[in-house]
Structure formats: structure tokens, C-alpha cells
Image 1 (spheres, rainbow, N blue to C red):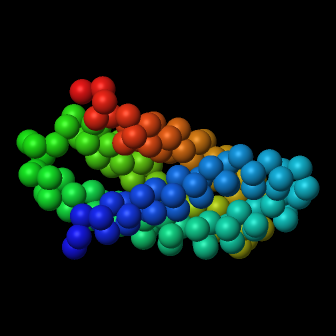
Image 2 (image 1 turned 90 degrees about the vertical axis):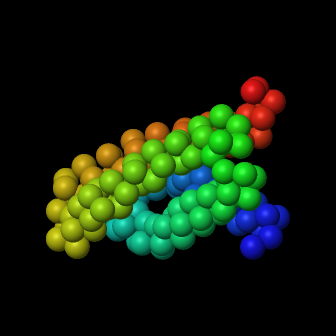
Length: 153
């Protein structure tokens, strides 16, 4: 694979994942809270995540694959700057957080919505919101590191 293609794939994956979290956190959530009651809002979130999370998994795979490819292309872990190591470490933390959101909390949200157990679904969504906020913050930090990191070392 050409390094330019790997960088393009890497950046597009960041746009999908971090951009999707930004949209959900700062636009969709406030609009949904303002206009919908829980029996309408919670199924909206379940349906939104059903469509968004496969794209996140694809982004995670593309980020890890392209990132490791680029590290190898630039000479391996010993040859790349500390900021590359920081981006990888933070990306792995984000992946672990997302894995918990997907495999635990999202499943609870889906189960609660399917059973119309609004308190269960709302509790799961509240935890998802917190973790997406954390991942969004980490993602923004990673973007800063990607742009400015080589200038700090």
C-alpha cells in the first residue's frame, strides 16, 4: 500500500469516528433532549448507534491497520517519534472505551428499548454519553498531537 493511501485512510477514519462523536454529542443529543420524550428519544439513539457503530468498528480497524503500516514504513517503533507512540496509546484507550460502550452499554440500551424498559435504557444511554464525551475529548487531543506532536519533540 502506498503511504499516501495509508495516511488518507487514517485521516478519513478519524473524521468518521471523532466527527461522528462530535455530531452526536453537540448537535443530536441536545436536539433530541429538547424535542423528544424518553419513549421516542431512546429508540432514536438505539437506531442511530445501530447505524453509526459499524462505521466506528470499520474506522478502528482502518486506524489500527494504517497506523501500524505507517509505523513500519517509517522504520518501526524505534524510529518514530514519541508523539506517534502517544497517538497509538490513546487510540488503544479509545478502542477499549468504545468496546465497553458497544459490548456492554449499547446492548443494555437495545435490550431496554426492545422491552420498553425506559429506566434501564436511559441509564445505559447516560453512561454511553459520558464515555462518548471522554472518547471525544481523547480524540481531539490525538488530533492535536498528530498536527503538533513532531514540533514538540
